[in-house]
Length: 309
Image 1 (tube, one colour):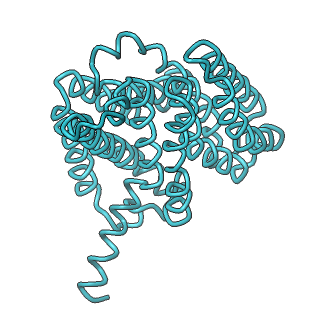
Image 2 (spheres, rainbow, N blue to C red):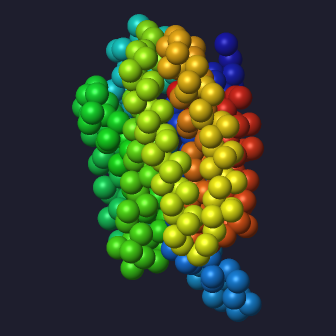
Image 3 (cartoon, rainbow, N blue to C red):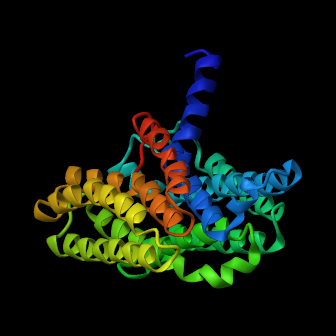
């Protein structure tokens, strides 16, 4: 193999470690948080300088979540290298396409980038980014092996990411903090059912995940009823979410084979964008929800090239 081909394969392996399709779902968190914060009103202002003041911090936060999510999933493979050598030998580290040391450096650089980029929005955003980075490392190194703290810790990362988007207006975080509970429950459901991804799961785990998803969807409907009377828009996104999530989750619950569980996890991860669209719509209306949903085709396209789980 010539040097150019080797370098190409290495760069491809680095991208595989970062799971690009998943990173797009993290962008949706930021966009939804942006809509929830009320900063979207700045885009409706005809003053170009006002729009610029809003767009630049949004760009920094999108870069921040790219680093935070990318770094978190890279460290997931770093800590799981020995296990993946047995269960998933095709992954970049156990297949020797990326050394464990190089992956550690990449993950560290990405997390540092995430915190630095967030600091360009505000010090408060940087503090949230730092908490997300620490929580991601806690999950990767320790918590993921615990049946309760694993799903909870991963959910906290995702809930924190939504609040990172809200922090574009720092004062709004204290008013909208409870929204983080929705992605926490959602990710807890996905993380719980994903435990059988390699060897198969248990029916009880699937039932638990379905109950959590039902709570999430009920919460979205409540949001649509209480805030800005956006129930119709939220119902539309919630119905779409249900069509994407419920069938594969039921299939994985009834017959918890590894391939069914992987399909359920993939559907759950990609449908985070639909969840974010519903949250955005509940506070800002149909069009911000649709703007968030536009990220879904990109994520689905990348998921055909790069692994999601």
